[in-house]
Length: 85
View 1 (tube, rainbow, N blue to C red):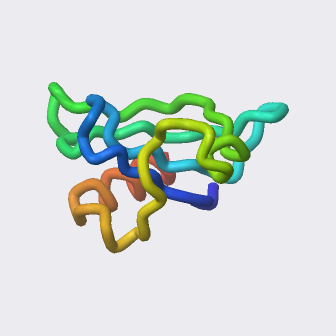
View 2: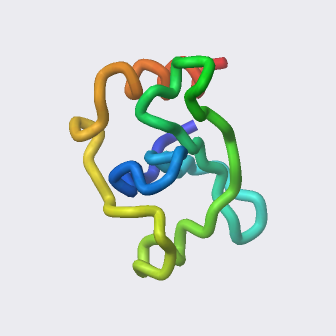
């Protein structure tokens, strides 16, 4: 799977990061929702579906679009691990 975008809501919710993937289910895209401490037993790391078109238009509250380098190495490593499982 390819990453289309990464959004960061600044920690307003437990799933701070939303990683949108290129796999679609109808109008929705698969996404990986993560907390900053996603590798912890108390962290968040779950797949979901989201409306990427609405996110691109600013019609959702996923936070701001960020670059890969804005995400911590721990979260980057976790994303890589989840996408290769």
